[in-house]
Structure formats: structure tokens, C-alpha cells
Image 1 (tube, one colour):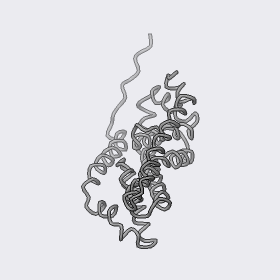
Image 2 (spheres, rainbow, N blue to C red; image 1 turned 180 degrees about the vertical axis):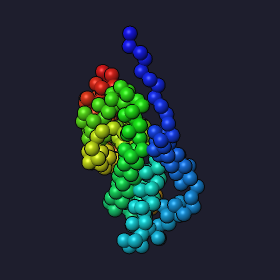
Image 3 (cartoon, rainbow, N blue to C red; image 1 turned 45 degrees about the vertical axis):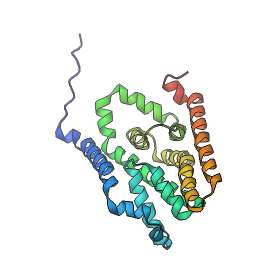
Length: 226
């Protein structure tokens, strides 16, 4: 009879990275909501329109906002108000992608080794789920109208997927919802009702496409869906 496997040793050294990672994420997500300087950055249209410098300030501030899992719709709305539809969509897409990649890399540094060592078969199943077709997996989950962008960043980081499929799928998958937020912001600026209608249509299209991909790709099979 085989002896039971030894219980994992949760030493301070083993737990240091994942605990630090989670503490910083939680502290950042709570703290950034109450930082007047960041709220001012996302709300000061005059400063953000001031040439290249203003645009770099927006991308930096919105990237930090998105990296901590705060709603990118807020930053997208600000981009629409400040820059209009075309430039605003480019700005928020750049910022949200950078923020998501930062979360991915943070999880890769702080969580992957711990997940491999401590979760065993459960982690292997998750890893297979995300890495079989990483681009399609992330794209599908980004398009779905429910779920947490931060959680998806962390799951991608602890999995074994390469960073470039994650980047490409994140950029494309976030476009519909980014466009909705930008259109709403630009509609407030110019008072165009068609922009609200187009935003609603894009949201519905994103949801339908995400659900269709979910049911017709290996993600649905791996998750036990019909």
C-alpha cells in the first residue's frame, strides 16, 4: 500500500511571490479608486489634449488603471470625450492592452511556479484548457460580456501560453467593448444619438460572437459544454 503523498510545505519562501503579488493587486485596486491625481488625469481633457505629452500621460494613467483590474470602460469613456472616436479608440486600446500584459507578466512572475507546485492535476487541466489554442481561448473569453479582465490576465500568466498570442487576442478581443465606451464618451461630447445606437449594437455583436466561439471551439468541449 502506497503511503499518502506528503502535505505541501507552505514555507514563507514558497509563499512570498504569490502573496506579494496578491497584496499589491488588492492594494492597487482599492487605492487607485481614491487617488485624486489619477482621477484628475483621466478627467482633465485640456491636459490630455496637449500634444504628444498629454497623450503619453493618458496612456500611462489608463494602463495603470487597467493593470489593476479597474473598469476600462471608465478610461474608454474618458478617451472618447477627450479625443473623439478614432483617436480615442486607438488610445484606450493601446492602454488597455498594455495594462493587461502587465497583469499577465505579473502573474507569470508571481504565480506560475506556485501553481505548478501546489495545484498539481488541477493546474494541468487549466493549463491545457488555455494553451491548446491560446489565441482563440483568450479571444473568446475577451469577447464574452461577462467575466473579469483581471482574472483572465492572471489565468493567462500562470498558464504556459506564450505572451504574443495573449497580446494579439487581448487587443482584438477588447476592441468591441472599447469601441462602445469610446462611442458613448464621444456621443456626450458632440451629442450624436447614432453613436449610442452603434455602441449598443457593437456590445450585442461582441456578446453574440463570443458565445458562438464558446460553443464552436475546443473551449466548450474542454469545459464540458455541449
